[in-house]
Image (cartoon, rainbow, N blue to C red; front, side):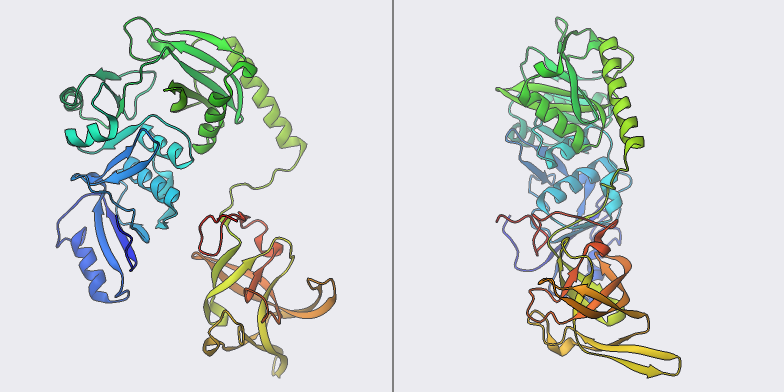
Length: 457
């Protein structure tokens, strides 16, 4: 899909209610009529029309029912109605995150919990998975064969467990027959000829051993609950490439206690699925699995009571961000994120105290004269909440500066923080965000640059 020269905004709905309905096309019509973004192109798209495909090369594409790729040209995606189709919505989110396309609301990202959305979460994290197709309707023969080959295929229920309900079929017509005989959510994958697979025990995101499983004669799946045999493999003997994929898969779906199923396909390990809390006290090799789980629990207890753990669930920002400072009347201020600086600072001029009936206030002008700022937008400001502090500049010299308390907004999140006023006209960014502001609020990924994307040095 060719890249558009104008912003392309997708509005996602559960279904296509028609071109005039405010639950689909009519919503777009009203947005255009309002005229707030006259240069933007708006597109309505329905979750039920999407065909989600991960191919044999581990590339992912979202198609409509006609086979046209969707969303690759998006500048922003808003999920208007999605709750009735959480799995498909979650797959779309995984695609958007992998492509660096912003979306709202963030709650959509936590919606999917079954096989279809899991496969896309794994793919989004760079894990090699079995090619997979998922769709609300049965897609065309052409689309299935293009994505998965000419057969044979495996048809799995999206919410199945212990190998139940899995069918091996030879052709497209048999795919249709299986799906129509049990109208539930499903996924289709190519059948991979194999001698067995690995159920890797990943506890605490470490490999604690594995079961090598081989299907019973005439069976399709390698699940021990379906009659397969198993051999225990010590952690050190689990193939390195299998172990690496298993740990990455558990981390991608945040299952700290997981049984990760990995199968070799053309000499390369691919993840079949990640089973949360998989058969610890039941099934095969129970004693070994319980011992490994006990080791994991002991480590976690020691970690919890032995030392304070940092908060690793914080939002991530890069080296630069754009922020709003509503109390100072400025928007879209270019800011540098600096974990080496303790205090935040903003470029300001004309800094002086003024006597008032109630005491004093601090007057100043922010952004005036900075090279990255439109100086016509520089505005005089004042602060009643301020103080003087002694700071060291980047050369180690002590300076007396004023610190004001003001609100700052990043990606819609409003916070109040202290910012020093200083001369930054020769700096790249007029605003610097230091450790005192970042701590407890954000993690910093230095690979993310000024445009919010990962950059190569």
